[in-house]
Image 1 (tube, one colour):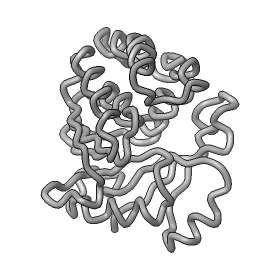
Image 2 (image 1 turned 120 degrees about the vertical axis):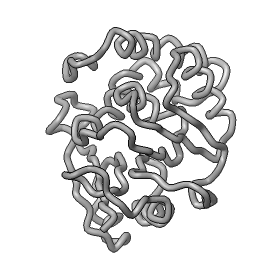
Image 3 (image 1 turned 180 degrees about the horizontal axis):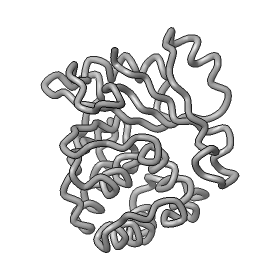
Image 4 (image 1 turned 120 degrees about the horizontal axis):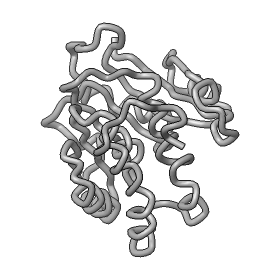
Length: 207
């Protein structure tokens, strides 16, 4: 499914993506990090969904990206495989989920992922180029948490540092409550599967 939309992968990357399914199934039997009904649709509902960010943002090498409330490692782990020369810091308030991520990244030799058992708003000593997140909290909260963590200098010519989150449904009320004017990209304009209808990439640049 991934190669339906992306083709420029090394054999290492392809092998890492191939093994994700079996590893998540194995770990999900021990620690429930993905809903039972979603595990059989892992590549569509989790991996490809995460990679919609890669389809829209051509990140340059050397960036630092934080994944807020990463859960089982999405979108951070698929993005880390896609962008092996970018550092991804995955944080979550539930430590057992991070143990799964650590084990999977160790098994697949994914070297550009670090994890931290912490809430994003508690991080005081690090700055990042971008924050990513998926269905964790309302946009207003995500921006409140992520903005203090963003570097002021912009390293990409075409994109300012900012928050990139994956959301679904009618977002009008949520966006209005946030007081922000984010950019919204319908994911069904990127991927044709029915699952992606009414799902969006939301981008809030740090001006």
